[in-house]
Length: 220
Image (cartoon, rainbow, N blue to C red):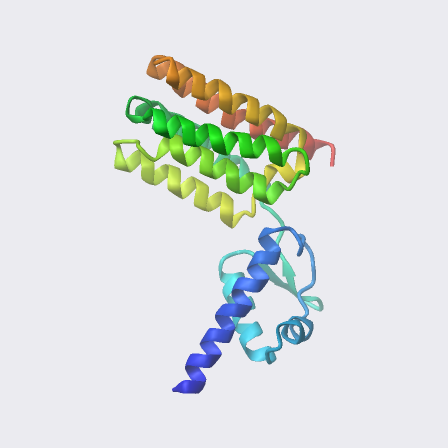
């Protein structure tokens, strides 16, 4: 029993460590995951690492190729497209419905996060910027009184996480525009703009990020 618990614990640690490197882009798409090397780095046997890799495979982050072994999966461009299109619609609606419920303290909190994002631009870290971006938008959509729409927003963000989507890694110039658009969105909410105007601004903000990614992808 003790051995099982410890093996599970090591498997969880291996899973967390490898997944973090995939999400942060240290292990890039196509990177070969050599179980022995990973196990040595972690100070584990190969067994818990193999369990962790199987779990990551089930999540779609890792795939097995004949004569190659385990490699990091690439980002599915079609899935990314559909996820961003859907999120632009549901998050726009959630933000518009949230607007009347957003307090002055909420605005101040969102603006503080946005200023941190602006500071992040000086020594750009796409993973950190993406985390802050989610924090910013969470302030604006979480007060949404419609639980069904809010659930769809959460699902969209979870899909982006599964896709390891840090668009700003591929189009860092979009990050500067995003910060400015955040401030414009906050000003609309502060001014008590109508729901349609807020929804459109939030939707176009998300769509612009998708457009920047698709434009860049054509040149790769």
